[in-house]
View 1 (cartoon, rainbow, N blue to C red):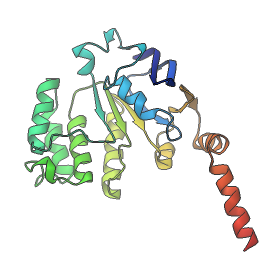
View 2 (view 1 turned 30 degrees about the vertical axis):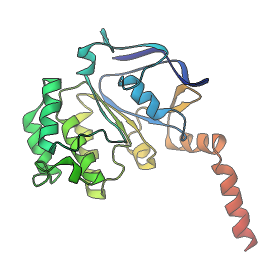
View 3 (view 1 turned 45 degrees about the vertical axis):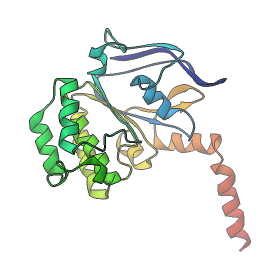
View 4 (view 1 turned 60 degrees about the vertical axis):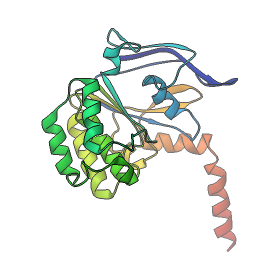
Length: 237
């Protein structure tokens, strides 16, 4: 179980979240959604200890987030890449595996094949396209023996075939580990319905369906006014 207690983060005088507490089970898929600027990426960065927070405790079972054991129990695929351009894809993977200590090399080789990466794995990362960098991070993270996989817009920038492949792999991985996805994809909200949470005003609120999310967006965002404007425009034409 991943437990987060009293997590507080602010920039200047603005609180992104204040005293946020929540928990995640060890398996399955959780979607985190919300309007732009609601703090979804900041939340992932905080849980993955990529940024400092004002206060709060994070544990996996009895493992504190400040420990090496915690860092080896999680992996994070961010929306912005932090990849060393001077390394080849294989060198990056091997470096990551050396940090985590435990990894599935047969899975690694399988994913290289499934993602059509045989001709790319030994090239310099600086030559990679956006989609190739995303594939490299997916291959690396899915090959690790970790309890929790975090990802920010995981399938963004991937072609349709690769999106389908990735979703299929997740359908198997979710039975043995937890996958927490920040997403704007309505398709993802239709596919993974067991645990969807909206980050709103610094709180993670559980919702039951995509329709509830759409209702929230209409009430909270500015899209309702825009839809009205469109309706009025075409009505007058």
